[in-house]
Length: 507
Image (cartoon, rainbow, N blue to C red; front, side):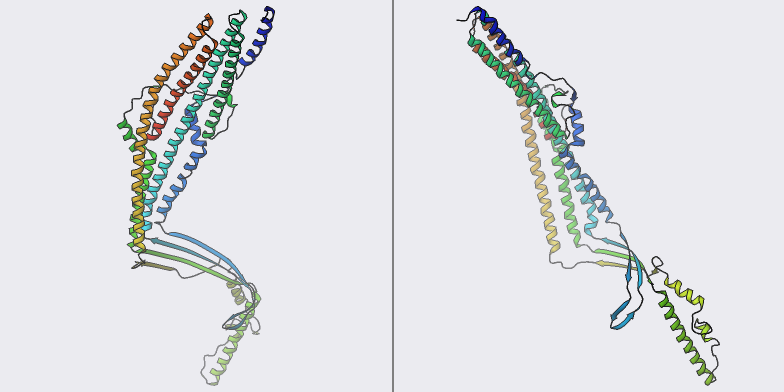
């Protein structure tokens, strides 16, 4: 039997761990808030998953520009320089190349090709670009759903923390009541220990609820694509969502989904692109037009100018000797018409052993052409029209493949349409069920709260047991948690319905 002087010590021993337990998982101060609108805005610029799809927009735009660009002639410019050393080369017979030379060249070309593929490519690429835009829109809808759902999950986890905190308060009050009744001899030590166990379980449940809350917010930031700027336990979500009776009509939702579901719109755009591909395949039976034009030029400059002068001197001397021989023949036959100055006419000085200065300068100037004093070549142009007669049934194969792809696209559209309508219908039913579940859980929660109030009152008056109180508290915690889950299940069901329809339904 416990003596009276042991009661203060026992009370002190019980109060100390109680005070420690009351300090478990204190509510942290709020350092930053995040609204759903800010989360969605940040996600559209930072979410890696969304940006992966967004990156497809650039290539799709350039594909359209490329298709239109192929209707215009293509142009190319090329140029080059070269060097050939002195030495011996062979062309039929051996000859000596005694001087190295440098050369340069340029060419400007235009080409223009038109066929069925080129003519139909712009329409096909525009259809594919439209499909890419719809894919991006669908990725935006999926992003909105995932962010909204995770935002609701984080709010749900935060609400469960509040439920856990409230349960800790109830259990702390029950423990104090058990201690007080034990001190006055109205309860046993078993009641105190039972209250301590119940309080300890609620403390652990609170710690786990806080951990779940923090993990939910971390997952939200991961989906957004950002790092937490403040300690995660100090980040609070600022939005709240009212529960309203769903007034959407199924037929209206199905019409909205048929016109606005991004996945369905994307497949329809690809169906259009497949139809254009059939037209392109049939266009292979048309003639092909090919035109080209070009300009070019070159230079060639010897590096040994002295060799050119020697060759020029030898040529001039040969010409002068021929001139003198002609003069002798004419004089012997009395023909007249002799050249007065064979050396001068050949470009030699009076001695016949050196070139005149103007001739020397002319030879040097004609050789100084590298790298940009080009010798132009004749302009070239051609126009070709071709019509394949027999290609081994290749054109028939391409048309058959294109038609098969078009039929596949049509079936994909039909399958997706059925999936969208089924999904909208199922999610609409889910919203109705989730809304009704809130009312059921609300009634259950109110009953559980009344049950715990009655159990505590019976225990306080001595007509009830601690086990009844513990059971009632467990029941009310479960009921309150279920009510929170029912509320957020409804909001998540609405978010899923919005994603299936492809547009927001709530203002």
